[in-house]
Image (cartoon, rainbow, N blue to C red; front, top):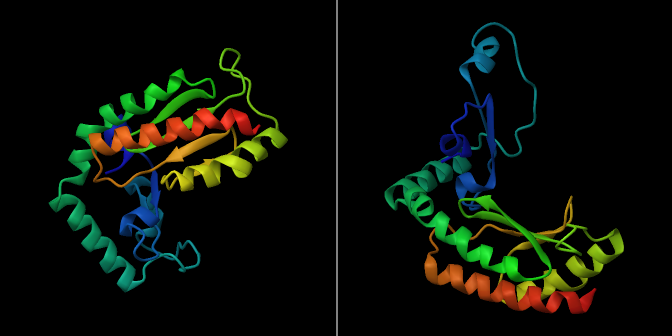
Amino acid sequence: MFACDDFGYQPDIITTAKGITSGYAPLGLMVASERLFEPFRKGTTSFPHGYTWGGHPVSCAAAMANLDIFEREGLFDHVKENAPLFRSTLEKLLDLPLVGDVRGAGFFYGIELVKDKETRETFDDAESERLLRGYLSKALFEAGLYCRADDRGDPVVQLAPPLTIGPAEFDDIEQRLRGVLSEASNHL
């Protein structure tokens, strides 16, 4: 369920929010290792925080039902089995001049956009603004892709499709991205 399982490390803290309920109810959570939790096990040690996104009984019930569905429908196995094909399908976009890198894991990917593929030069702020908000955000949506064009760092198109998709949808996503990204350089 978490990246630490796939990459073989033991985190001290895992945080999650929207995904735990598939966005049906607001909930956030933190899972702490035994070592980190030990001071809170007894005594007066506390961690004061708000509870806007945590612990609500209805949201917790939605999360538990959602996790049961993930398990019953084998969604984690489905993603693990199909992730290599999703990656290889997205990597077809590397032939486009604007695409500098395809990176991610599972069904969560970033398509890095570059000004110069050979030097990996990125866009300045004005170019990034024109590209991402002036063209890509609207064009991706109009092409039927609900994703994020973001520049909190290098400009990327972020993809996080439903965990139920498969090869036919991978090809469809790649073709829609290809159409929009091929046209994007005309809007700089």
